[in-house]
Length: 67
Picture 1 (cartoon, rainbow, N blue to C red):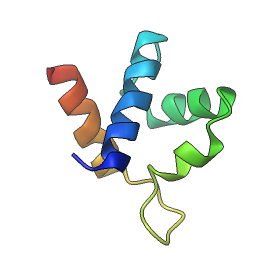
Picture 2: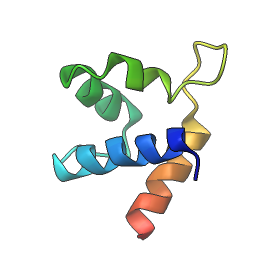
Picture 3: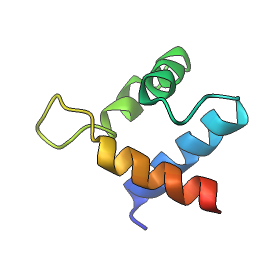
Picture 4: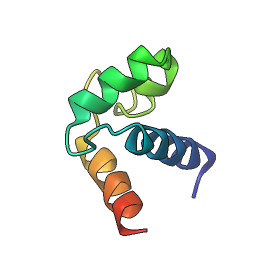
């Protein structure tokens, strides 16, 4: 796992422990913004784009919930 992916997994784990619905990317992003993690939100967007990388997000959530 890359450093970025590890950081993303840590953020997802924190959100999960806080009771955030990880089936909702919007809820997750809102949680990060409330935590002051503005820069971290960008790591879930496609490179050089304003499009949220839903595929990557869902893949990481699946790994987290499978573990």
